[in-house]
Image (tube, rainbow, N blue to C red; front, top):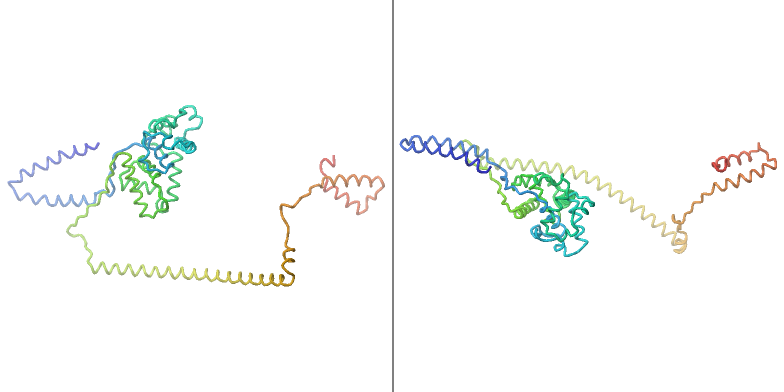
Length: 380
């Protein structure tokens, strides 16, 4: 594809050369080329690209993903994780760290534990990373390893990148804008190339939150590190051609200074208006806070005087002795109403045998209390 535009441009070059040879005998034909050159320059001014051209394609492989996860876990540069190394060598034989890396890889490739136990070898940690990545890719579902160009980041790497941008990048630079900068400024126009570069960024996590300028420099370092790992060359941002043509407006020095002075005065007026508005609101808030603080101090002083008077009159031992000793842990709830209801029912039956007056108010109140406390076992 890269040679097709060159082939199309060859006949146009030959056609331009023929009139030049014929015009040697007629010098008056030469000035006709000037408007053409000027129009071509003018069109070049408006059609010049403002983004970096796309770089050579480099597929996003399972090996690249695995190396990025290991580099992030070990806090090492991406380039230090060799494809010929083994997990056991990289972790120094530490079983806890080794199991964490294997668990992260299984989550990244969406491999269930049962599937891994059946199809992955027991000594996966002793295989080179190039072979281990192929084994992981074979066990991965078809949706996560269908195509190198359409491969999406896994759950683990997506979570790591989301945490990186929320904790270390400025709020005005979300991941979508970072992808756009990788495409326009560094030529990484393909989505899988941007994913690969962001995976390399995991091993270049800054120690603290960056400013916008520092974040741009950090993205440039990420793009350069990815290019070195992928063996490609980044394209430089093409600058727009600026040509001066007859009739172009030029702002004179005094007029430009006058316009700048007007803009400066306008900015100063707006700043004064904002300051006046914020100052009034801030003054009201400070006044209210000062009043609340004065009331609180007055109440505290009054309470302290009362306490001092009690201590002076009764003594410190008395004041300490009358302090409350309630504790919720010592509270007890006695729920024995059902038993007392049976006892009262037995007592009422014994009194009824002695010809108790049924119309007496005390007897009716007694029956009412029994009815309120009766349950199914008592009635049955």
